[in-house]
Length: 220
Image (cartoon, rainbow, N blue to C red; front, side, top):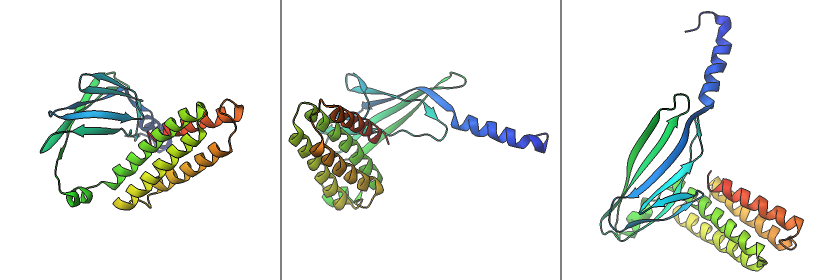
């Protein structure tokens, strides 16, 4: 309720400010396989704390309208169905009250290739490509730092080819994120090819910029 029309603008500004401010802190995502044979193999872009089969990822604070992406690679030897429990814990930024939300991530296992291909989520796959490309960039920069420029270029080229092959197969080859990945791979390959020794100022600057881009890419 606004008592005077003249106050409407300031009230509206306060409400917008509160919506865009921090709404959750101490954010953690815990993943725990619930079926025998299911294992978490890799978590892209985030450091994770392991306790047996359970993994906990510390996430940045959340703002109004904000979102976070976590791409996780699983393996399993289960025969029919697999499930993972995901629990998001956080504190309300204003009151400090603790909250948690739990969801069960489940999927069926089948040998029907057509059924699997038809169920592919293109948006999720584009995010997988971002995460795997970011990982390849970081690994390529490690090789470059050691003086193995050609090996670094090969890593980038292999990842680019893999991305293009999967994107074409599952129909997300025109996705803007995938096109950006391909452009980034080409740009990085050119930079590695043209850059001097990794220990030079130019080489250090390229490594720093590439690692920063990989970090951002894996969390988009």
